[in-house]
Image 1 (cartoon, rainbow, N blue to C red):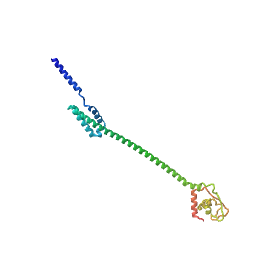
Image 2: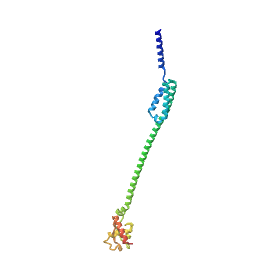
Image 3: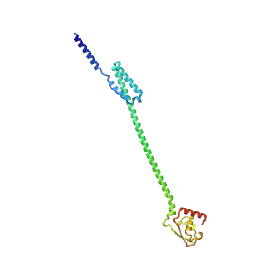
Length: 233
């Protein structure tokens, strides 16, 4: 009888142990626990502190029901609610992360566009400066050409001598278009022909005067000053 009683007790103990082992952990706990832990390792606590705190409170409430009150069904409801909050919080975190990435790309694009515009402006300024330099050089050359043409490089068709006609004066000869086209330059002819001209106001028909061509600007200016001082008509 004693032996049979012990066997019955052992059977009861084994049955209780098997029943305890067969008790299932709340189904939502295994899904929610790693989810909550993952959110805590990332930016959820800093980006959404209140929402993350609410998530932890819900999860901790489920933990209390599961471990303290042994209310598996009630605990599973809180675990499920915590999972839903974790999903919404994860979506918001992902939205912020994507928004940051888009903002960073926008800033990079703006910087690239600004750098390209600055490069284009520098190129335009450099091109304008080159054009200004070329124009300035062209103006300088153009300003020097009349002097060179008039005083230093005479056209081949211009005469280098002239035969005096009756009644002509040195200013009249100098004013002729094929001579100097300037009556005030007559002193140049006078100085080049001193051997024939004793008085610049008296010329003789048939005299052949040399017409200087390669004289400088300073010589021309000096001739004009002499002409103004000793004017003739």
